[in-house]
Length: 322
Image 1 (cartoon, rainbow, N blue to C red):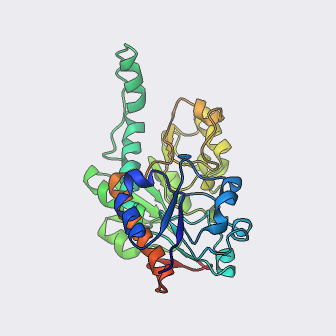
Image 2 (spheres, rainbow, N blue to C red):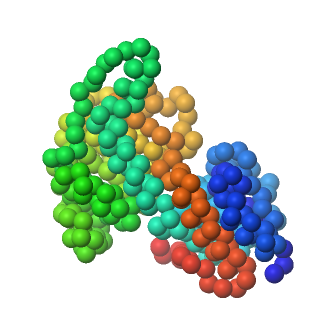
Image 3 (tube, one colour):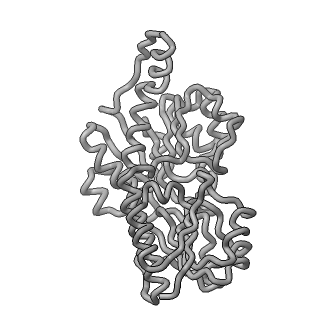
């Protein structure tokens, strides 16, 4: 195979994906890594894509403006599942194959989702800060047991979340446009409407993809449908939530608290108003950040690019209709 250049915009590649990097290099690939520790901007991509044959993509934006500058680009292997940052129609137009890893990070995200639920209900970050500052404020929290947890979306991550929650003695309800009834039955999940999940859940956990139809689906009206004692969790995509509406809901007591791992625009600015709200826990889009995820996803994406370069159909190939 002729030597290929592979741009890796997913971060920490040499450190956390050494086996995958060696696999690519053993097939003659030259690796160009992202040393910024964040998604690359258009200006940064413009500087490197002209000679690139393949990309292992984080959450940078890949659209026609970029593809026009990348005449050699054959494939993009998304380092994860969500491809809302990749224009699939434009990729098809330019003959660029796109793949993802639909279940590679599901367990990691499910585990953090439950961790955030417990953190909010038991005030763990606030207790940590208070104790380290010399306080002894034993905030009274709430248990998961006996409550109702609502899942908005019932794909791979939500299903694993439900599976893990079975041991917490909770009722689980879920909404999905195209629900997996077999998995719902297996995990004891009651499938219902979007509105019912909002109105009857003590915890609402977001697992919907970022699509035109789901953009800002959590808005003022949606938050007002929730219980005033409820909390909201988002480890899916930032664009499904109107952040100003979430700020209003938290500040005015429409809901009791929230934990979010994702923002509509990332990295989030330090002066973003929502970061000043006390009943919010936030993490920097880190749900998938585990050693196990990096190992698993890096090998799958590396192999996908090698398949593309060598004329084979890669695993998890996507089309513009998906």
